[in-house]
Amino acid sequence: MDVSRIRYKGAGEWCKMICIIIGTRPEIIKMSPVIRECERLGLDYFVLHTGQHYSYEMDRIFFDELELPDAKYYLDVGSGNQGKQTGLMLGKIEDILLDERPDVILVQGDTNTVLAGALAASKLHIKIGHVEAGLRSFDRDMPEEINRVITDHISDYLFVPTDVSKQNLLAEGITDGVHVVGNTIVDATFQNLVIAKSRSNIVEELNLKKYFLVTLHRVENVDDKQRLENILTAFELLYEKYSVPLIFPMHPRTRKQIKEFGLEYRLFDGLRVIDPVGYLDFLMLESNATLILTDSGGVQEEACILNVPCVTLRDSTERPETVEVGKNIVAGCESWNVLSAVGELLSSILSDNNPFGDGRSSERILNYIGIKS
Image (cartoon, rainbow, N blue to C red):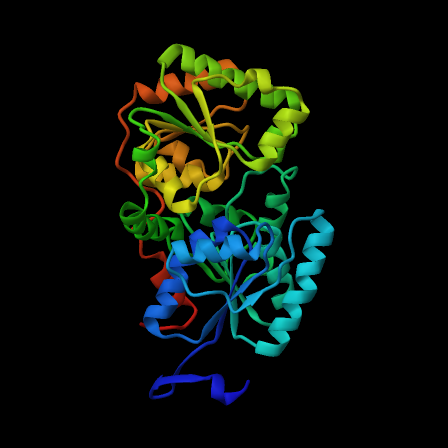
């Protein structure tokens, strides 16, 4: 390694160079506290953004919202078929790692960016830290599950959010380098909510009081006409029963599929469809909602942290801790199941128990890879 890249802190102690690899908005959110901690400690690090989903300009706005420094590298890979997208990222990431020669890379979650980054580093014998390791839905039909499993089995540091995740790894024979650190989403939610409260007025602008918040974007839901219709029917039944508006920042893919399947007739006045909103606005919508209906894993976590009841519109979840503490029910897509789950949660008193940690996950992660504060 180029000795000019080594930052000495005293008597033989030195900081490793870290490459933080991200590619999607959820990854930016969950790695934002790690980036802030690197900044706070003055560490030698850089951010590599693959651009898996979004345009450069959209991401610049997102970094500005969260008050983060820009990524050093932006690959602009864009959307595509699983294999082609992963392969394209793999080659481009490898070139950068060969040039920069970091000591360790950090990847977060289960995207194609995570898999490509981990594979590139593994082949170059660069240490891999997997943030949010050990999650399992036990559904190999989900491409995210494949990404999680492979990344865990080639990582050197496995930063698991909970003991449940640790047990998942132990069951697969992974015992070395496993550390329970909590989930960086707790750090991120606490830190970013402070920013959101000072910057976002969306609740007032939409004149909202009591409302349900909806998100829906997963392929298994929006690309299946029957599932999509069942879910939209459930929304209508909920409005008929509770007379509470459903605020729906609609993903472009969901909008496209509703039109393609001819399901516009399932949209109704109580379902307030709005354009997708920025993260800070969405965080405010989450924190003020009466209840959330979602197929997003990250939203399940945020709802749990914010103590907002959540109904998951999927058949399984890789966040079972949210169910175990009584804040989330996995309802699938059948209308009556969704209605029943909402009724059960609204009649319950939620515990203040947060299974994902105390908001110091980023500090623990950096300490485990040998960076002392």
